[in-house]
Length: 317
Image (cartoon, rainbow, N blue to C red; front, top):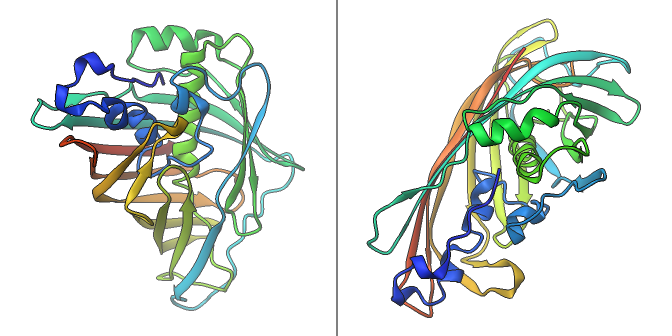
């Protein structure tokens, strides 16, 4: 999705470092719910080009640390992905991101990008999971047109033995316009940081565990996902999720040495339910929605920026 950078001519005079308040503000929020990880795309840092210009780009994903809270009922066993090389799966990913921002007492403005529906074929190989993108659709006519040449774009995932995603590869087809490339990349980032890892101990129905990830960037966030195994039918698991995020610092350092903003308030939390099959590489169904509000202040002026945002990631077969 294209990143919007507001020009200083549209800011009140009091917000002289208007660039501090709004430049890249959408880039920070684009990964929604704290997915402004470092590796976020240069599109978000510069407002220009996405990552995969003419080549595959590999991005490491922050380590996920699982902690068992309750082992649940008997019988218990280790949960591990067990799909064989060559296993394929048809699945559709949908991402929906909403953001409003308000500067001082100006009216709130909506900068929400269009939702994306991304059909894909996942194939397990010796290097992880290869994803072939089908025909992406979106309510935005211009973006929808941009996606007409994106068929056949690829992504790839490396996963740990516990099912945690450790690496994301992006390789849009060469004909894909930059706007479609950036939108595709950001959708996958959202999905990656809404994934789940399993505990390293045997569990049964009712088990509860946490997954902790530190998402680094201008603002480093602690993301904690609490998972509850609510039911199991063979390899098919239903898992309830609760997500919360907390900044580890009180300052957001803007990219490109643009300055810093004080974090006056940061609330981001949400819930969801996903169904996974241990014999398949991706979730088979479910949705996770995370939202909240953040308040940033420029210490060199009286300017305050308030963002209200939410992300919804869903899977269907």
